[in-house]
Amino acid sequence: MAALPKPQLMLTKTRTTGHHSGFPGARHIRSSRNDRPYHYMVHSPHFAYAEYAVHLGQFDWLSFCAGPGTAPVTVHLYDCRADSPEYDRELKIDVPADGSCVLGSPPGYAHWFEDLGNVTTRNDYQVFAPEDSTVRWSPLDDNATYPVEQMRSFRPSVVANSRELPVPAQFLISSAVSQSWRGGATEQGVMTTATVGGQQVKYFIDRELSRPGLPASQLGTVSAQVGSYQAVRDDSFGIGVNVTSCLADTMVLPAGPAWPEYFSVHPHLTVWLSPLQYDCPEAELHLIDRRADSPTFGAEEVLPFPPDPRTVLRIEPGVLMRARSRHVLHYRVAYEVHHARSGLPELFVPLSAGSALPDVDAPGDVLADDVVRELAYR
Image (cartoon, rainbow, N blue to C red; front, side, top):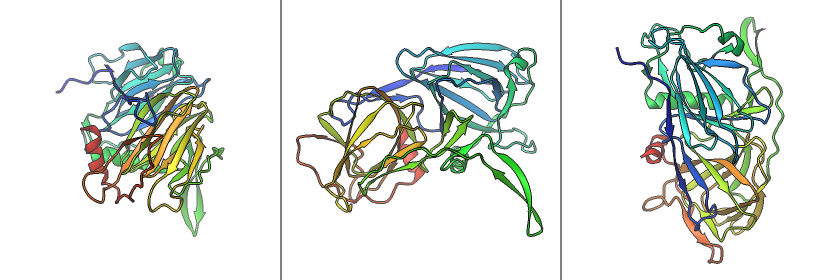
């Protein structure tokens, strides 16, 4: 029998963009190679968990990100695996909230978090199925909870899954969850039944959700929309993927109040930008449409960065952009890669603000998801 996995704490890598960029100094937190699905949890200032959670098939890889000076997140763990030689073992780990570490929590470990106020969690998870194919288990309903006070005197005994699903299947599950969250969902709906045409039909009544405000762009190549999210107790949000490739990067931008001297241009990249803070600081984007086939070719605007983590700003290829803010901005960038009309796709081109503005040809179709993922984590 193979040894059971244990919790792990690993250092992440970071990469900082150079000064020849519309986002100079932006720090890319490489908590994942983008070779497994992910979601974010954006927590309000007063958010607190009152329960331990146990997954049978989900191996969580957690990183935490918040503003400078934020205290570490305290993670409590219990080994609840019936076949573990360390069953009932308790662990307590303080994980920095600067994105510098990733904590791995295997299936069958109960976990509870303290000090999550104003902290955003990224979870890059793996999905495991039961070794015995006759065991009933659903990856879409893999979260048992136990009150903290109850766990102090009682620990459940579970059999954790141990057969990792193929990577495409894991991304398919992630896409299904995100699709169910498209445009907003909550944890607090009601399942009921009704008779329709003489047949019993089950349906889900969701709680009414407040609608986030969307910045209105005048450019034909820029649009804002409500993304994939689930509201948690009306004060925090689970943020799902918005692109079929399921790829995204965590970014931190210590922007200044003046516009950078360079624009970023993405000739063959559609980027989806969204904030990763519950109360996002004010920030602005300077956008110029240089896509040759765009109905607004040559137009420019200054657009507020979306303040709400439930929203996403979609910027198509051929748009020049740069950002400014008086605060540190945490944001997510998801992306789609397009074919070039000839040669290899150009993903990023720096452009001095004093340079002649380029004309960018229309891109080709979006590359297949598996190709984009392979490019992302090689």
